[in-house]
Length: 286
Image (cartoon, rainbow, N blue to C red):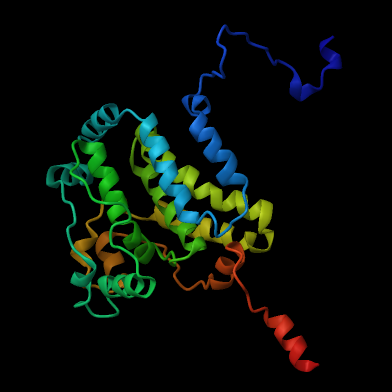
């Protein structure tokens, strides 16, 4: 009888199907590659055998294989009628071609100077993924999103570490959902959403001692995204010569807090050696 069923379990209907494989009304649940990615990347610990950035690269291809690029491009075409920033972005079709060496001539305190220091100290490449010739609106958006990712670290106040990735990701997530229509915003952020939340789930499961650091990073990013102009379409190359503070004023980026030191949280989250100040003082006293 229904009164014997726990309240929260009432109303469940067991559906049947002739399909011999898992099938649902969600294209995301139907995708075995995404199910595998989620189970691994949201639940695993960190380890040197599988560097954190590799997860984002694999996720990118999974989501792209699921998306209808022509449909998303049509949605962007429709949305440009309402958003002048998007209209300019699509009309210009701007793609960067600068190299790391092109940045070394800028002042050290400038956006480009800071970027150059990070690139050289870490021996990073300017392009997260190899550049390609965009064939439609959505490919242009994807290409530029990759090209400006490191700029967004500098401009939104996300350090170049794991908590910094959370700041940057949630700033973009909030910014896209603030300005774009819900359906289009979903398509533009599904990759970033899954990529960002793996940081939070791993923190809860395996690194709870830095939960406040990671949650704080999410809050800082969300504040920036909600308070700022449509910066995800920004042409950062135009503000390379400015300091981050000056660039934020030009681009309309607000509520940035770049004063938080997340070094210790980053090292704990990545299972790197951490010098515990309390232990050091205790040992010294002995």
